[in-house]
Amino acid sequence: MPPMPHNTDLINIVAVGLGMAFVFGALANKLRLSPLVGYLVAGIVVGPFTPGFVADQDLANQLAEIGVMLLMFGVGLHFSLKDLMDVKSIAIPGAIAQITVATVLGWVLAWLMGWPMVSGFVFGLALSVASTVVLLRAMEERRLLDTRRGKIAVGWLIVEDLVMVLALVLLPVLAEIYTDRGGDGASPGAGSIALMILWTLVKVSAFVAVMLLVGRRVIPWVLERIAGTGQRELFTLSVLAIALGVAFGASALFGVSFALGAFFAGMVLNESEFSHEAANDSLPLRDAFAVLFFVSVGMLFNPMIVIEHPWQVLATFLIIVVGKSIAAYYIVRLFKHPRSTALTISTSLAQIGEFSFILVGLGVALQLLPETGRDLVLAGALLSIVVNPLLFAWLDRWQAKQELAARAASAAHAAPLPPEHVVPDDLHGHAILVGYGRVGRQLAELLKQRGVPLVVVEDDNELVRRGRERGFTVVRGNIASEPVMLDAAPDRAALAIFAIPQALEAGEAIERMKAVNPALTVLARAHSDGEVKHLLQHGADGAVLAERELAYSLAEMVMSTPPFRPARPDAVPVEAPQPG
Image (tube, rainbow, N blue to C red; front, side, top):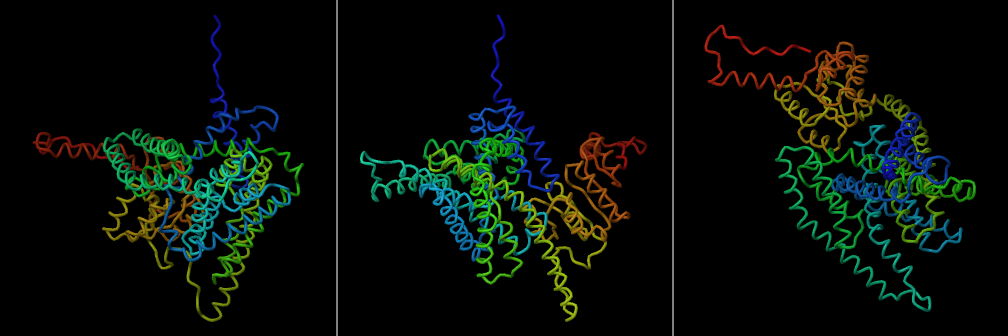
């Protein structure tokens, strides 16, 4: 009897999808584009509209749904009401006004194409929200997150995300109203519409109440108990179970979307002391499914839209890049902010991404939006994400000229401009601590107690906030980025300590630091003999093998207890650890 054939569609889409996403994502990164472009192109390549391998679309959609849930969980996990409140006076009215303008422009284009009013509304709404991934990356590359304009952009983005979350709740109601026709073709009356909306809000309110009254107590309690077991994989599993379980429960019990349930699970978990560990532990799986989500979105894109509807594609692109940007620029200027701030905000918002994909996917599924609308949004997203770095490059050149002119004028009036970097110009002989995680925090406190001047480099927003609350000078960003490294002033430093566990990344950064300051002493953390060798080869003066040092420390403690304390002066002591 021949062996039964195995159905490998799931393996095919995961293996081929991730493989192609890696290839095109790396290529996009090499071209200084967002990897998101590469993931979408990978989806187009394995989709039904291009020759060659075609992935199973149904499976892709299910994997995409998991990706949406984990994406929304991540949004909730990093949701910061404090960041929004800091800039609420401009972010809230500004974002709402800009969303309104973009939605109206999208509706006008849809009307010109002969679409129903509801399709124009969904289409315009999808064009109004910027990509979190693209915006934050652009801000981080330019060291803008800690500036006033960076905080305004992030607050603006938070408002856009909240509006999209509300849209995901109300779109099913809109679909029910739109498709609920009587025998005479009449739409439901105002009373029926109000009842539908009220019932939806009641269900959402009930879910929110359960999450606030029960979830805020139960979820942290569960995580605390699981963390106490010391089982890392069980803790990771509990985080993912909470994210997906709350999303599923929200849909099954309250009739709200998976996305909203996952978002609130992240928000509730954000208040827990284990939020940072939960974010780190769930990140690899969130990233993997997010990539599959973008691949599945790319699979839905028909490239022929560019040939069949070129003017509509161009109009969509112009709404995203020109219409939204002009609206944002004048809104910011209306609030009396400088021209540089207005240009930074408008440029950062001149693209669309993940929320737009979620919205058009739901719109097509609910038959509120034609498939052509989804193709136009995807084409606009690809073009806008490709063009966005070029816009920022122009903005960088313009701002450089403005700064030179301002410095010249300032020098003429003997009033120097205040530096934008966080490390004081008069700081010399300091230590640079890379990483403010569990090891870095302990080391920072010890160095602070001993009076060592310290500059911390950390790319996690929550850890940056904690470090600054403790009074440390913290440079936000990844040490692998040359501007971030230079912001820590290695040319004036005496010592650099790499407390991050990523030895490969640390080795490259050490090499660049040594090129800037050959006299700099560099110490690093390692977890294997191979990592020690790698770090030393790249210029580290010493590498501490954590497990070996722990073993020596425990051995010393054992030999200091009475049963094992050496009784004779000539007793053989525990061998001291060898340097390097």
